[in-house]
Each structure stands twice: as C-alpha cells, then as structure tokens.
Length: 323
Image (cartoon, rainbow, N blue to C red; front, top):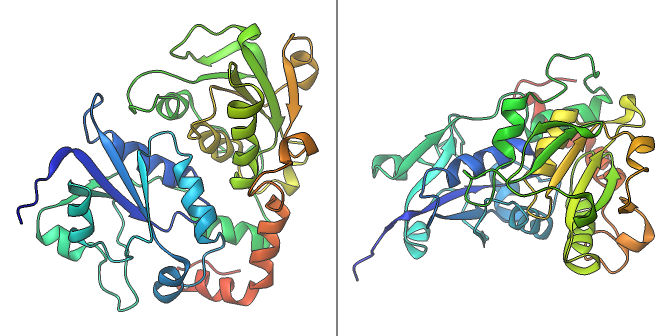
C-alpha cells in the first residue's frame, strides 16, 4: 500500500506535562512549518505509563494533558497515546511528512535518541526551544518554594514575545489583543475591531495555568457568553506565592483557543468602570459542572508534587537541578 504524505500536515509529539508556554511555543512553531491556508498540526501525546517507563511520573495525568493540548490555539488535532519513541508509521497514518521538535535531545529509557529513526529518514525538522522554562524548572520552584521576583529581567514578556503568541489559529495572522493595566494601554493590536460591549471579562492569577482554569474559560466562552469575546485580566496578589512569572502566565493564556484578549497586571479598580460582565476565576458559577474545574486547582497540583517529593528531587538531580 502506497502512503501519500501531505506537505501541509505535520506532526509534533511529547509528554506536554503542565503544557507550559515552552510547549505552546513549540506547537506554534510547528504549525508555522506548514501553510497558513491549509496546514494541519497533529499533536501526539504520550500515556502516563509510557512516560513513567521512560522518564518518571508526570504531574498531570493523561486526560488532563490530552485536553490541555486540545485547547491550544494552533493544535489541529490531538493523537492520544502516541508512542514515546517517534514512530514513522504513526506519522504515516496522519499523512505527516515531518515531525517537529526543539533543538534539544530527548532520550528513551535505554538512552537512545527518540527521534533517531525519523532523523535517518530525513523526516525531522528542528525549531528553537524556549529557554528558561521546562517542566523540570517548574517542579524545582514548587519543591524549593522559590520563584522569580517581579524585578527579574525576564519576569515580564517583551512586545515581540507577546506579538508572537497573539496570532490566530493559522499561526500567522494577527488575532489577540494585549493590554497593560487597562484598555488605554495597548501593547499588541489584534485582528478584529475591539469593542467593550462585545466582551466579557474574567480575572485571576492563572498560576500553573491548567485544565481547571481552561474548563472555566471554555464555559464562559462557549456556554455563558457564546456571542462575546473573552478578555482575561492577569493579576498577582502575592508574588512570593506565585510560582510562574507574568511572562509564563501571559504566554500560556494567550495560547488558549478560548482567549481573545489579555490584560497584563490588570487594574481591578480601573477595569470595574467598564460596562461588561465580570467574573473571577475559581468562583462557583464557573466551576460548576466542569470535568476538571470541580477538582483541579493550583494547590492540588502542588500537593501532587509534594506527595512524591523524593521522587521528583531525584529526577531533577539527574537533570542537574539540585535542591
């Protein structure tokens, strides 16, 4: 049987544990390797069992990781239970000519390059890995209870980073707006005519941005206000207890397909003056009936890491990150 590969279809795979903005950046870059008009990106996500065998327990379970990846704006389709070692037969099933991965090496349980075969076949493309963020780094901050202060030079995103993550599903066209403090200070212009009367607003810190949050954003956008654009205000009530930087939180939120605009360091008092419906993440009306929002919170995730503290310390030490 002849396999016909489509140059407009591309594959990316991974654990996508925490599905942080580094993962989102790789997904974005992978989508940009195929055409704006007809391109399709297949995201293969590994099972808990495969990850456990090859690198140790993930923090987020399979269902959480599958659904989080599905919520990514630039992911066309999630392929569940994709093999940990990239298999060209799986790529063939979806007519993908190439697999995309960052410029780092991923090893299997035997110490072999997971992409060795597809590299030898000439079916491998490299994209730039996002520096300074990884699941290992996030776990390290949870274990040490140390996070970056707002004075850190990389605490806030720059305009170039914001513009990059603000693009539409085609990974090229302008889409999301980004504001600072309130709606008077536009950092990135969007791809539509922004009007307050057409928007609904929700705020929160969105630390460790997870499926509990995304469930609530989906409910707001798809169920409660299907005719409105969703504006996200990102706040910080306590820097010492916030694990992710503003940059990490903003870029993660921008990658979510339910989001139409983001306000960095949202000024609650100033934004209260606008005539739009306002919500706060984590309230009963948003959590009710959600598959993930009824149980998954930042504190639940932290407890998962702390409950296997020694395991994660040992795993991080193997990667050169000691407590």
